[in-house]
Amino acid sequence: MKCISSLRMKAIDRNCECLGLLPVQLMENAGAVIAQHIRGKLESGRVLFIAGRGNNGGDAFVAARHLAGSLGYIVNVVLLGKSRDIGTKEAFRNFSLLKFSRVNMFEITDSSQLEASASELFQEADLLVDAVFGTGINGKLREPESTAIDLINLEGKAGKTVISIDIPSGLDPDGGDFEKAVHAGLTVTFHRMKIGLLSEKAKEYTGVIKVADIGICTDAEQYVGPGDLMMLRRRKSEEHKGDSGKILVIGGGPYSGAPTFAALAALKAGADLVTVAVPAPVAEIVASYSPNLIVRKLSSNVLCPDDLSILLDLISSHDVVVMGMGLGRATETLEAVRKIIPFCRKAVLDADALSALSGTIFESIAGNCELIVTPHAGEFARLRNMETPESLEARIKAVREFSEEKGVVTLLKGKIDIISDGKQTLLNRTGNPGMTVGGTGDVLAGLTGSLFSRNPAFLAAACAAHINGTAGDLAFEKAGNGLLATDVLEKIPEIIKIAEIG
Ligand SMILES: NC(=O)C1=CN([C@@H]2O[C@H](COP(=O)(O)OP(=O)(O)OC[C@H]3O[C@@H](n4cnc5c(N)ncnc54)[C@H](O)[C@@H]3O)[C@@H](O)[C@H]2O)[C@H](O)CC1
Ligand SMILES: [K+]
Image (cartoon, rainbow, N blue to C red; front, side):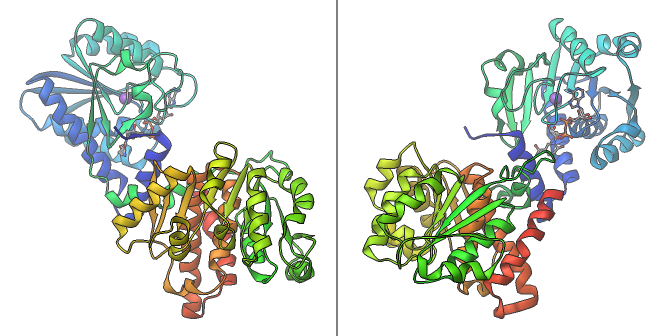
């Protein structure tokens, strides 16, 4: 069964919103599904919803409204706190609708009030619905939520049915340790199984688990979207120089622009330090492009095995190596690439570096080096010794199988990019035909390296593809088909800033 983290679930919700499926619509579906499960457990009688001030409570307000429309139910809702403190506009909207529904509302702000006046409500109830919190729980349990969990559990112990919305309140949705939680008879979780529900400790709290569909668009989960960018690690105010990533770009020789594009993209995507190691004849040219770059001169006209003596120290003082752009395919260069890879902890391999790869390389680095490869269809064909399929489905399968077999993350560039680590696969459709211009692939490699220094490989590659394409789309609005890789570079910070604001 496919499990999901609470963070990824939030990312999918946000992706839905960006596609036009609003959070209030998902909440409506979630609440309706809960009402349906209540009807399945109780034909008629008193139902008590215990709702927190987040969206988990919002789901309860919707369910209460749906249930109040069915014959035979007395519906009571206890809100833990004041209605003005309800945290989201969707939950507040649904709370406000209860005034016009056959629902009795109680706002209870502290634990003594809860114990004194609400205990009757708890005792009279035939069925209790736990909506104190869901995936939004954080930190130590506070009051009155902690007491609410105790009161629900008392009734559960007395044999009453307790239904938890999304997760039993108190339980860590991602599987860590937790203080206490609701003991549910039934947990109705939305869209996908949450990782924490299957932890050993969770087993005694969840009761039967049902995974309910709430109408999430398939593309919100299959394609990278703005929600996924929210999963990227953010800079903390107390960070020091270098904490946000040190990137070593190894490229150039026959070309000087390609490694420069990658290096500047890494900076634009938030890396603190970028060093560009290039063969001697182009070192001064690259340095003259931008004062932001630290340039290290290699020994010869092209990258060669002798350069290892210079590169090994550089590799160990940087977080990620981005290698391949503009290197050329001289025999000594490909040999050098093969020798360099095993010394990298994290590397992004692009363009000519991909020509150096062979099966034995993947075997030799297994477990020591995390690799992201960023081929286009032709390079992917060479990597696999097989034509790259035309159809999207067949391509996805090929990328997934290749990534799994070689133990790498693959970002196959195309009209639709495919990103896979062999287990998870995402697609990206941002970008435009103007981006076939030279240099945009180099930008993507640098961007990927920058994100990789601070994030897991798969997330970094998926988000880099999305950011690169979105920056390209923004640049295309002005430049049209005259778009240049430098235009894409300029737009990267804007896209990342929007993602960070959320
Ligand atoms: N796609 C979906 O799965 C959908 C899920 N929905 C529901 O939304 C919740 C998550 O909502 P969120 O607003 O993010 O958080 P919660 O309601 O779980 O909790 C926030 C609420 O709880 C308070 N709080 C947090 N920690 C504590 C604590 N330690 N002690 C006391 N109080 C705490 C916080 O202050 C807030 O008031 C998800 O589970 C689903 O049920 C959507 O409705 C539809 C889409
Ligand atoms: K809950």
